[in-house]
Each structure stands twice: as C-alpha cells, then as structure tokens.
Image (tube, rainbow, N blue to C red; front, side):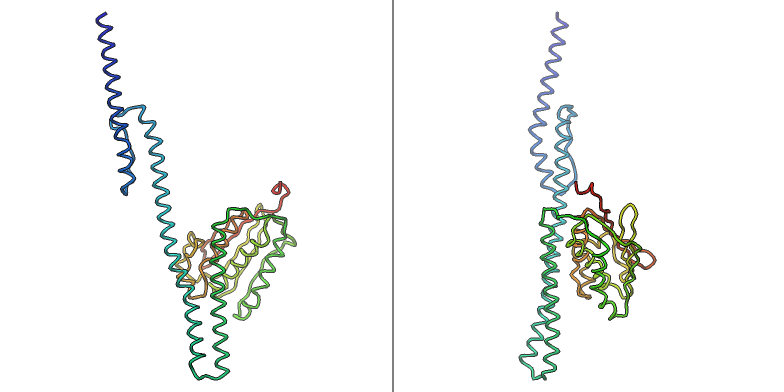
Length: 303
C-alpha cells in the first residue's frame, strides 16, 4: 500500500511539475513571439523544457512566423520597387514634357523663320507622341497588374496575326537598312488564344528588337508538341540579365536613351502567361533569343 501511495505521489508530482513548466512556457510564448516579430531575425521559437505537447504548437507557430517574415520581405521588396518605379515614371514623363515646353518657348520668344517654326513643331509633336506612349504604357501595365479576370479565348490563326505585326514594322526596318527574316513553313497555325493580347505580345517583341538592336531580326516558327516563336537579334547590351529582363522597369536605365519605357517585355510576359503560354530568353553567341511558347488549338481546351 505504501509503495502504491509513493508511486501515485511521484506521478502527481510529475504531473504538477509538467503543468507548472507548461504554464511557464504558455505565459512566455506571447512575449517571445512579439520579440521575434519586432526585430530583424530569422530565429524561431523552441520549447525551453522540451515539452512534447508544446512542440506541436510551436511547429505551427514557427510556420506562421516563417510565412510572416516571407511576406514582410516580399512587401519590402515590392515597396522598394514601387519607389524606384515612381522615380522612373516621374523622370520618363518629365523628359519629353520639359523638352516640348522648351521648344514652345523658342517658337514664342525667338525670331525664327516659318520654316524653323515648322521644324520645331515637328519635334514637339514627336515629344508629345512619346509622352502619350509612356502614359499609355503605364496605364496599360497598371490595368494588367490590377486585373483579376481572365481573357476571352477563341480559335485564331497565329500565322495571320504574326504576319500582320511584321507588316507594321516593315517600313521602320527598311529605313534603317535592316531586315526581318521570317522563317515559317506552316500554312496555318491554329491556337486557342486572345487576338488582342497576342497582338500586343508580338508587337512588343518586334518593337523591342527594333529599339534595342542595330541588325536584322530573325523570327523562327517551330511547331512541335508546342508552338515556339523564336525572336533572335544581335545582343547590344552584354550586361543584360535574361532572368530579370522581363521585370517591370528593369531595362529603364538602358532603354531610356532609346526611347523605351522598360515596360514592353514586362507587358509581353504578363499577357503571355495570361494566355497560358510561357516566355523566356537566352544569350548565345552574341545573340539574344526570346522564346514564346504557346499551346496548339485543341477542342478539349475549350471544354
């Protein structure tokens, strides 16, 4: 009987000790969480007394802390990118506007001939068109990142859309003694897509090659398990990062000298992914390749 009482007493003592330590852990837990959230650290919370029951709770709390830190870092990165974007936007908008105001001042306050005035007005027109292009690009991109809807898809002929886009740039390339070399042996390329978005993607890629290269543009169409459009031109910037070039405003410092917003490839990426495709780039033998992958038309995709 005495032995039973001693054993029960030890069990009760053990339980009381466990409950005491558990109570201490639970009381300290909120303070430790607040401390970790208030400082820049990746430390996690561990049980000081190695209590089994508290460990399962801490595993979930630590998972939440990791996610909180991840979101905090993501927010900080986005905020930094936003601040940089605002600086870039203000600079890009101010440049053609200031230039236009300067030319207007010359016309109004200088004694120049009608012929010179006409030349100045042509320059002003170009600057204002540039300003309009910038505003439209910023507006378009803001619509993309804030739009949660999905584009309407239909069966379309990629070959027709691509050739129409090429025709729009034919004269621009010709004026610079450059060519668009188009390699495609398909009479018809049916895909399930959105004509407006796809046109914007192709136009951006052709326009990007026109602004950021001095040589010919080669466009190769490959129809296999997927449709691949390969846009190849001479690499003009050795420091170009193909992993980051599709990020908004990545190319702004380089492209600003060539009259580009740095948004063209970001828009192309967003639209391509909206259409269920993929876009990426490679640097090879002093050439830049931008590859767009699209799915072929299938009635099953529409179901």
